[in-house]
Image 1 (cartoon, helix red, strand yellow):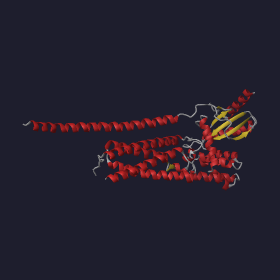
Image 2 (image 1 turned 120 degrees about the vertical axis):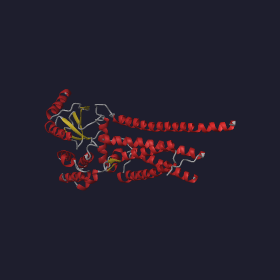
Image 3 (image 1 turned 135 degrees about the horizontal axis):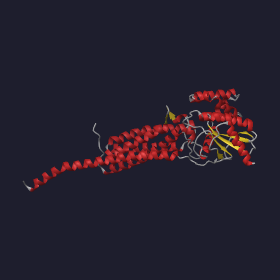
Image 4 (image 1 turned 60 degrees about the vertical axis):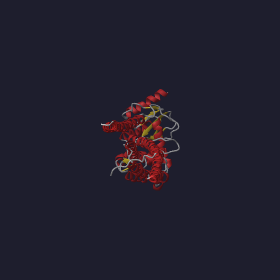
Length: 155
Length: 243
């Protein structure tokens, strides 16, 4: 399939630039956040995130690791994938990449929702770094859905 | 040839050259973007590893001799305070458990031993649960009994999966005549986990990097005594210096 390129209409071009900038920022923040958690996990360090949060409790809970792989590492790979896809879009301007990013953010958002539920209901403790990741995943998802609707209406 | 057709011919010749140039520019731009991304990510990740690798405190002094809540053995009014940060799953801690136990038996009137948790999360998968088990037993008045049992039976539970380790800890609790239901409720309670994590927090603030780490009257014991005799001499020397 030959990849399609973006429409040359000005509002679309500006809008897509803004969306790509949002994705770059959120995926970079999410990547740094998840990478920090991964490093701390492999160092075996306790996480201190102030008196209002219980990062230690969340990060040492059985839900922090799946099949021996820390969730933080999976999160870092997720944000890295979004970052690479967004940079690929900047480079190639293929609309197809936007659609891939939009689909991937659905997966990230649903995972984040589930992890938020685990923190709130099952573990009953919150971790600042996990909440920051939830914020990034939600931001990516919302902007991706806005982008999808906008492109559809312009199609 | 008319001047108009000459102009057209010129522009036809120019087009492939322009296209080649724009392709080249695009390729250079792509190379710059991707190499910038890869380099940037490498620098950021290495930077984070370096920054987070710095110990939070280089201090050799205990951050909070008074605010920490420890389990205490020995003479509670003795001026010599030995604080131990330990991990129930650490093999070296078993060795020092035997040394401190003997020290308490023979020199228990001269000093007080404070026990605090510093479970190493990665290398010791069951260490946090073991610490929580000791704390849960402590809520029924048998911290030290569980403490001893966990060290004595470290080989039995150390390599088990988490669920099996919890079953063993529950068996130990029952063998110590603890209320099984209360033990299981306390094991994951907020009060118990908070206690373990608070100990770990004070360890970090005091620059603890390994277990066991000892603080004698607030000062980190940098060269850990390797056997009972040298540890005993260290305490007696501290006593002499105080008097």
